[in-house]
Figure 1 (cartoon, rainbow, N blue to C red):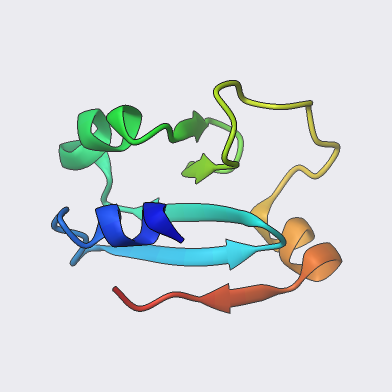
Figure 2 (cartoon, helix red, strand yellow):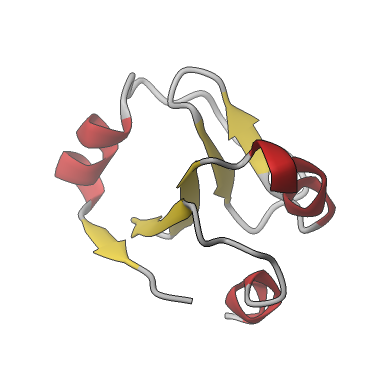
Length: 82
């Protein structure tokens, strides 16, 4: 994915990157890179305390999953090393 290549340009040492279903989720200490994530098209989920990228210019529909753990159980998860 092109977005993963762009993420390599950001200092993500204190972050966890996960592919859950077809969405990319970034959690951890993201405060210092939040503007860079916004520029790449990521949105912040306050409930899940993580940034997500769904490949669209809008957030998408509201999910009924309250936690990232629920999403992981439903869609599976793959850790991404950048």
